[in-house]
Length: 143
Image 1: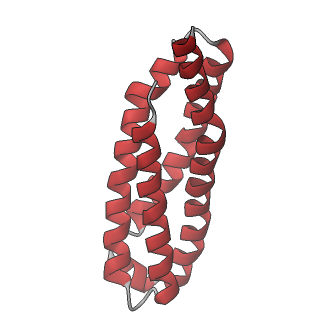
Image 2 (image 1 turned 180 degrees about the vertical axis):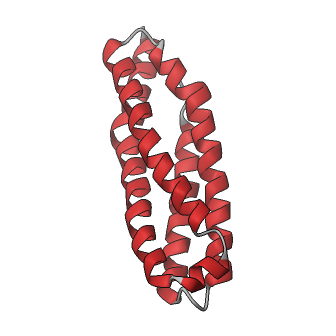
């Protein structure tokens, strides 16, 4: 299974997180419009990535015939549900400049927690899940 597209989407999401953090560090109040727009854009990237994972990656790996990888895929999918719910609640709460301006400290605290979870999850997939899927694909090509 070629997962280059998933890796590229991770790069896009990580770039979104970096850009958002830079805007926040430059001043939430002075960048409220740009922050809100970045959240909306990042949400689109995350939704696209999750949709493809749910429709292609997880089902493919669930039926791959490798019990350990199928189990890993199932656990990753279950774990992702909580992360997605937290991110979507965050994105809904902070997708407008007016809301950001009304509670910048609350926004920063929530952003730190939610974005850290997304970042850590991406890194976990990049270092554990995707290599396991690639190893199985390489093994099957070699057979």
